[in-house]
Length: 100
Image (tube, rainbow, N blue to C red; front, top):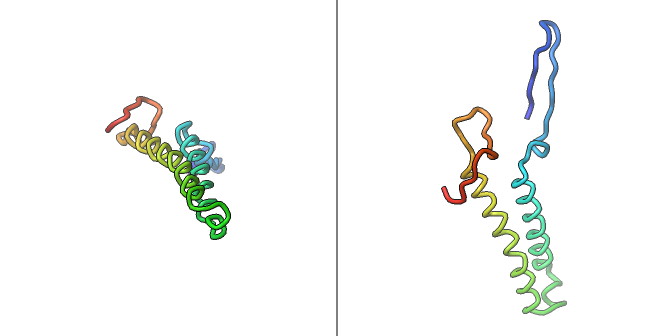
């Protein structure tokens, strides 16, 4: 996201702000939940992993990774349901609705 602030008629200041710096706490939690779930899924999908640990352990790896992704998806739904689209800059910190 880029914002420009004009200080004088011949000079201006441009501030660069990354989306990561502006992310809400829910977005950061959701990101980490996705990272953990993706790690389990990546390990479970490796070609040699199934033959090394067996079918039950491979299935357990995917099972352990799935709640992480499910939790991340729930946080994404909650965050999307709480955005006030009437504002020029949507803000998710005003109210919390669990179901839209």
